[in-house]
Length: 318
Picture (cartoon, rainbow, N blue to C red):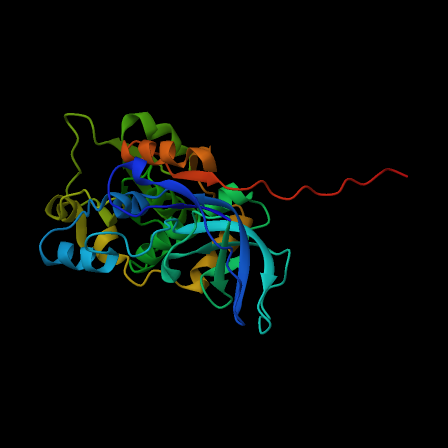
């Protein structure tokens, strides 16, 4: 099968296509024919080893990822596709099921035509109202946004500010806070993305690129920095007494649970949230996709289409 691998750290050009052996599912695993994956900020950080931390955290990051070269040569932190085969003890899925999944806990691997996943892992049936390309952009950012926001115990009518509202995590956070928790949401993003953020539920948008940009003092019940770029002191000054400050880097640990994926599926099928897709690239242009994400200008998710969904047989009219 075809996969994209990297054996050294560096720019997007370190990614290359390689033929590798197609995996075979073990007893409790399923084999997924991957139809779509994504290029996340996490993928570009691992590819470049440009870790957004310092000191001992940076040392630990390099030990985990590989000090001189990558330990896990196939990136891709989430995927959507169709189950092609199942292990002999699998009961939850069957061949032909359309699924979406996070690969974070199984050493990544979304940049390949096939991936084996444990049936009891971060894998559930795809929302019926999404394409594979749309569904691929849900697991990572969607679960992160939900995991962080549920810590705040948001109540209807509370004022919630999402910093980085046009990014992958931010676009889900705006929708979850506004349409699920029924909060009054303010999004912070560039002026160019204000229309997008309003269209997904923000009642107000602040442009952080303006010279006069400032957060009003003691205004918000909850502030969620969805990109890790807001000064904590600046953010906390805008909280009401007793308000909750959340940071995606500090508060997303342990944010992967199968129940979160099932909840996101339910919210998507109910029409409360939807993935925001910036661009879709064919598998052959994955290097170009990484270049684009490296610019820091992406909105929502950047998707890689690995395989077309199987064609449905046509039915002749009688």
